Image 1 (cartoon, rainbow over the protein chains, first blue to last red):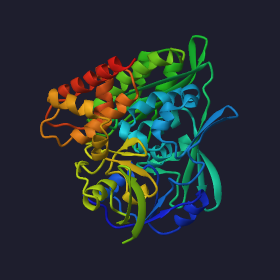
Image 2: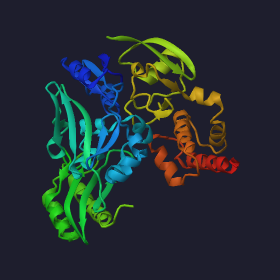
Image 3: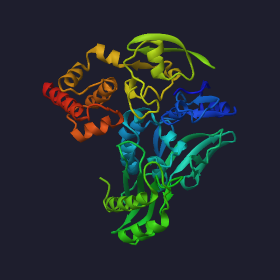
Image 4: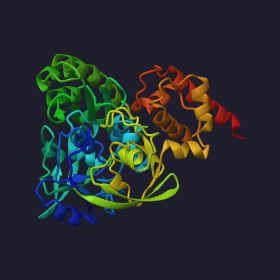
Length: 280
Length: 160
């Protein structure tokens, strides 16, 4: 199908984008890898697309004060090649090859994946597992939102209609950082049936600060808090059993809820092994 | 409706056209420029048949608006084919029956060329993962992987 008619404007700066978004029915266009698909299918019909691709400075990856900041317009492929991401954000590096296909990653942006907040997408779950932050520019100025507060419902986030996501910020990995990532999809690069992004801190042979963020199992990335506690106590099977309390995935086009629940346990065992290993 | 004047390079030639904001790049290439080697399949980024190069990187022609390409360089299968840069890949597809109906082939060639441009001989698994975004409904992929692998070996052998 073809999109319904809309107007198009190229933003010159973040402030200009926020101003343009003041119009009723305006939407941000970044990589467009989800948005334009929804336009083509006429699942959305904005009055104006505000293209931020030409805004300077949003495509940077910066390490500062123990954090790594990834600009909203950093393309997935650019992030995949970035040495800073491999070193300071190994969970993101592990997840990226699963985000869409190479042609999607050449155009899709990190900020777009977070702002679109598909419940089966990899990067929102990584942001939650890493306890990251989102930088937002809006009509009243910039603000920061923690990952746990950012994802609010199905495709619903802390972003208002006039806001632009400008960057995400993650704690840079240290020697005791442990991460794990696994997903199951029918075709490599498709949205996951179930996936798991995890982070923890190694303390001797034990794990602390375990954060398990499942995706494809609810409206947003879902923390498995009972399983986190069991894993920190060193009991993988108790963690798998705890998923019965932590997760209640609805049936969807990919699989029935009970199948997803079983697969979540399979993934947790795989990820638990990864969390036991130091990063290369 | 909003019409926009755009200037871009397509296969090395400068093009100036007026486009509606809602026209996708692949429709623009096919309908305005007559470059019909880029195919329209699913129109939502799943099948990969519309793949073209934007500033050298392979992208979905259905998930990009023509108006966004103002000031950029686009290369289609016509340009890649005329340049001779993928002649070995095209020949390998032909000799190994890596196409039947040919609908997916232009995009499949561009995706495979991008993988091979990275150098070396990728494993068959890596070839499959790289081509995972390009559907082929005829061949079952085996012959496509054969062709790409053969070219990788040939290019590696041809290098000093």
